[in-house]
Image 1 (cartoon, rainbow, N blue to C red):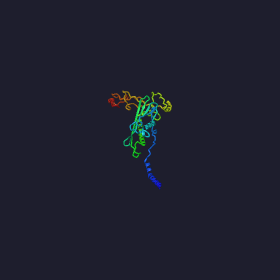
Image 2 (image 1 turned 180 degrees about the vertical axis):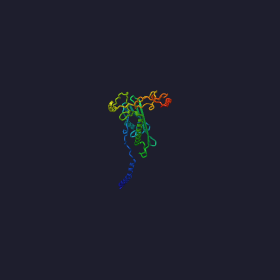
Image 3 (image 1 turned 90 degrees about the horizontal axis):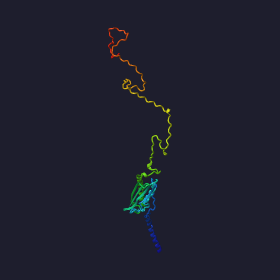
Length: 307
C-alpha cells in the first residue's frame, strides 16, 4: 500500500509539471545564427584608368572607443573591403587607385539605439607619384530595434547585421556618385576606351591636297566619269547692252534711250525737207501769170508760215 501511494504522488506531480514544460519552451526563441554574406558584384563596376587598385583599412573593429562592430556577423570594415573588390576595377596601364577606409564603427547609445558610421576616400596617383584625383564618401545611420525583436537587446547579431546592410546600401550609392562627379576623367567604358575620347580629331591638309588615309572611315564611292565637252549644251550668250549715245547726239523721239537690243540696225534716214529760208516765193519758170501788175498771192509770205 505504501508503494502504491508514493507512486500515485509521483504521478500526480508529473501531471502537474507537464503543462508548464511547453510554455517554457515557447518563451525561449532561438537566436539567428546564420547570415547571408554581403557582396556587391550585382552592381555596376567602376572601371578606372589605372594600373592597380589597392585598399587601406583604418576602420578595424575597436578603432573607436565603445565600438561594438566586431560583434556583427560581417563587420562594417569587411563589408567596405568587399565593396571595393566587387566594384572598383583597374583597366589602365599605369598609376594606381587607393581605396582607404577612414572609419567604420557601430556604437550602442543610451536608449537602445545603434549609431553606425562609415567614412572612405579614393585617391588617384599617377605613375610618377603625383596626386591626380580625389573622392570621398560619408554615411551615418541610426537603428532602434522594436520591442518585439528578440529580448530587447539592441546589440544582437541580427540588429548589427541589419544596420551594417543599411549603411552599405547608402555607401554604394554615395561612393558611385562621388566618383562619377569628381573622378569622371579617370572612368573608362567597359571596352577600355576613355569616355572623354569619344570625339576623334583629323588634321586637314592644304586646299586641293590629298587627305590622309583614315583606316576607320568607309571608302567613298567612285566618282562619275566627266561629261565630254560636246555633250554639254551651249549656254546662250546674254544680250549685249547698248552703249549710251554720245553726249552731243540728239535723243530719238521714239526711243530716247536708244533702239531695243533685239532690233535690226536702222538704215540712215533720208534727209528731211526743211522749210525754205525766209524770202519771196517765185513761180516756177513757164508758169503763166494773170497780171504782171498783180502781185502773187503768196508773195510776201515768209517761210515761217510754212506751206
